Image (cartoon, rainbow, N blue to C red; front, side, top):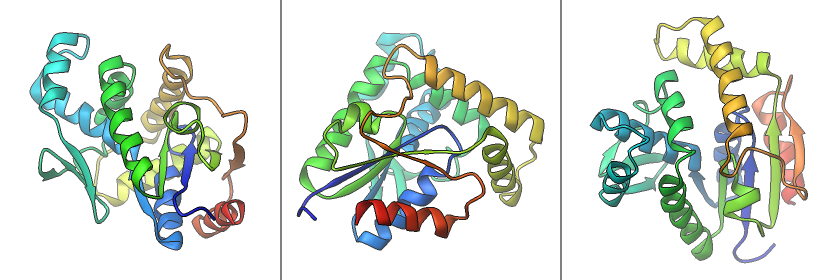
Length: 216
């Protein structure tokens, strides 16, 4: 393996990208960069600031004063850990909205590329292999059925004590898929040279092992 290498994991919402990427990072001893969390963090800040995501001037001003970092598994927004605050259906919707905005994508992609140029990383998101790291050494497209993804997300949120309805979770995932796949700027799609891995019916350990086999 190269001294510095990049692993790009793309796929739809709820496919298990973050969970798998974290486990693979630990197994390989490299850094995990949760790009989806970066967009969620921006979405959270936009909503918290009460600005209109379509107001490009206000959005750029907000981004100029935004710092995002990762330390020991935590995502830090402007010096504050926001792990749980960004993992709600409401913020998920806002993340999908801000991810279509060119100023947001430009800023975060610059940060992501800088990370991958100086150290080995594994990143997951919607356009890592097709845009952020087109020349990544390893590209994986992780997917699962809508039902499987809705089941996982519902269980996750219930375990966190959130009051959610399964039908709404299912509907949100369908809407997110449509938004991600049809947006004009870097839509979700499988890179031509990516390995597609359907995780429907597989547990975490089984998926991690399949990813490790691809990298090895």
